[in-house]
Image (tube, rainbow, N blue to C red; front, side):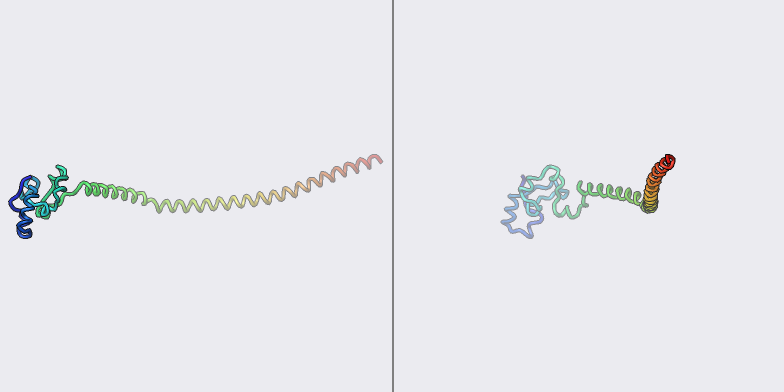
Amino acid sequence: MEHLLSCPLCPSTCTREDLLQANQNAIKVASFCSCKNEYCFSCGNLTERGYRNLGTERRAAWKCPKCRITSPKIQSSASQKREASLEDVISRLDNLTKKLDVLPQLISDVGEMKTKIDDVIRSCEFACNKVDEFEVKLSGVSDQLSSLESAKEITIALQSTVNTL
C-alpha cells in the first residue's frame, strides 16, 4: 500500500496529526477510480479492514465520493433481476387479463346452467311426487285385489255348497 502526500478531502477538515495518521492508513485508489486521486480511509468511506475485504470486482467498481456523485448509476444485477421480474409480472398480468376477458361469458353460462339444474330438480321432484301418488294408488288397488280374491274364494266355496245341495 502506498502512502499519499495529502488527501484531497482532508486538508480543510483534518488536523495535521489526523492527516499524518491518514497518510499511514492511506488507500491508493488511482487504479480504481477515474479521478486518480488518493484518499485516506475515512474520506474514502471505507475502513482499512473493509478495503482489504473487498474482492477484485468490488475494488474495480469502487469510486471515490466525488466520482460516485457525478457518475451515472449502473444498475445492479438485483435491480436487473427486479426489472426482469417486473416484465414477468406484466406478462402474467396480460395473461390473466386475457383469461378474465371471458369471465363475464363464463358467469352467464354458469347462470344458465344453474337455471337448467333448478329446472331438472323441479322435474325430479314432480316425478317423485307422481311416483308417491302412484304408489298410494297401487297400494289401494292391491288391497282391493286381495279383497276380491278373498271374495272369489268365498264365492267358489258357496257355489260348491249350493251345488251339493
